[in-house]
Amino acid sequence: MFIRSTLIAGAALIAAASAPAHANTQEEVELCLAALSQEAPDAKFSFKRKSGGALAKLKFEMVSADGEKKSVVCKVRKGEVEELDMDA
Image (cartoon, rainbow, N blue to C red; front, side):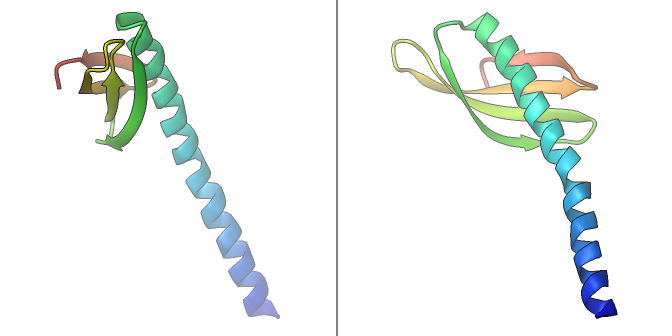
């Protein structure tokens, strides 16, 4: 019984520890989407992946109004967009 309780508590702790990382990624995606929509208001963006540590690099696919697709990189540090690379 003790082992089962310990395993359940451990699983809950791991789940709680991983939640903020996902929430942080979601916040960064939302920041980037807001900045990208100001640069290209008629385009549609889809999030592809995140890399980096303190300087997070989020990669998006942009589909312009005329159907052209290209990759876009948004760099975020401490909750602020530092750079948009629309020519990635």
